[in-house]
Image (tube, rainbow, N blue to C red; front, side, top):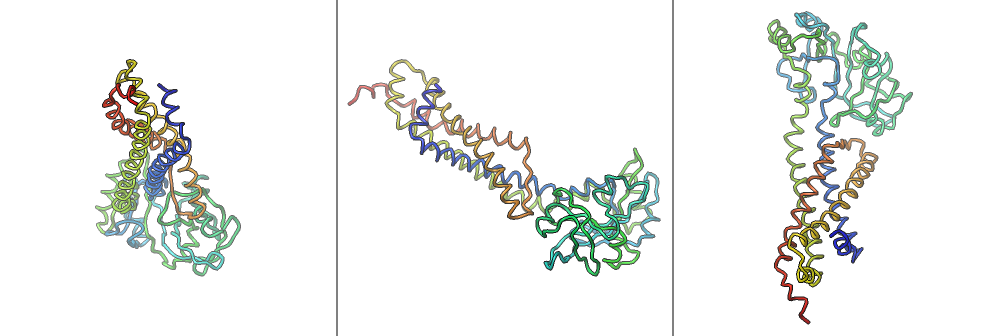
Length: 366
């Protein structure tokens, strides 16, 4: 079966290459849009990674990016002193433009006033720069050209790039982590903070602590860190996901059409050969396995080329557009492979019907 199927496909190598390219393009399209969705769906992950389990905001604040929260620092400290709350970290945050070598760049400045006893080396490395310095991620480095040791101007403050962290999960805005004292001078808000990040005692119930805080001050609103992160990605899920679903469907249809057309053409062109096989006793199942083998080889080759192409395209896109966020996951690769196998089986159906209708007597005709 396999030698016959391979001979049928490689009889015209140019057409086989074009067919593989068509399947590869469909696989590439599906993988790229899935990876884009995964990358954009990580928006808000920063708030999940921070040590606080609860986020306290001014009531009416919908999310960190599209609304403003202003809380007096003393009020925040007083109203979050409830059972189960180990510490409340004042947070300053603001989206603003800054001067990166004469170019205005938008970013999300964020500063945490973490107590010294909770400021672990990991927190300092990721979020807590010393005074006069900032921490940026690799996406912002690519956008601005700033690297470790360079200087950028934030408002009236010139701050040095302390370190460049790996690419962050945030796509909508890149974070610039600022020392709290520097942020107070840049923002000029005195004793007002934007949020409170509440770190809980081990075993404390987040919902119970949240209810206790709101009971003490109804003017405050409390999110769990997952809910706070989800409030950011909600808009993305409602607008981006439907578009991706349509693109994935288009990719699947294109792949099925290319495989089907190639296998159907290869079958019709060898009608007499299949007739000979039927004349010498080849069963319908045997002939079907030949067609399925052709579809499997074509789809397998297209999947490998498409997967490698998707990774290569993503790397080139990141170089051109630093915000191009992709996240390739093994589960997605496995899912696309299963879809490709399904395309092969589906594409084999029409040629099989053609084979079953072949009259073995065709081999005796002139």
